[in-house]
Image 1 (cartoon, helix red, strand yellow):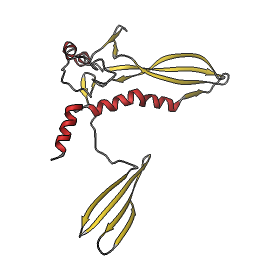
Image 2 (cartoon, rainbow, N blue to C red):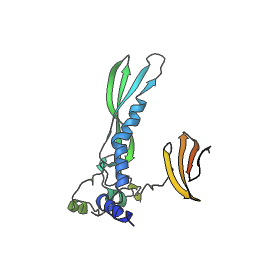
Image 3 (spheres, helix red, strand yellow):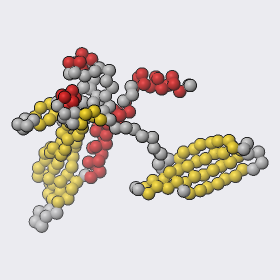
Image 4 (tube, helix red, strand yellow):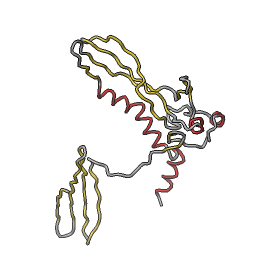
Length: 213
């Protein structure tokens, strides 16, 4: 019963979609760039002039679509719903041609489109006043946290899962003895294993157990 006031306070301050928005913003603002930085560069092997493509900054443009005549139109979530479109933004990657340690050319290249989460930092609805949201056909009470894909609203469902490579400690009392249990679910790639330790305390003796699963 003591947890409900805390839960109600969190929902009142952050809403029901804040975890989705925070996760998406973190990935778009830092996670995506970290992936590019990890790759760094691509070596191009040629018989005459080997060179490298150096990968630089990532930037996300405003949500837009390409019309049938080839023109570019900025799009809002409501228009994407009505026209069965995907509400997304072009991803631009800075690429530089490097030969013999010298940068010959550098430009931003459109590498793909990224679906934009409604009400995220990349969304045009972010921080708009209620009157402006109504003008764009949106409900001001809509918390966002979902995508518009081919006109349909799609949400990423969060699932409870084990926390790998972390110590999980629990205790219980059995037959008058206090049993402490520590487990580590180890994961490397696709291989998973479990290591468990048990420490039992009672009035007569102390026992310690160890197991690998």
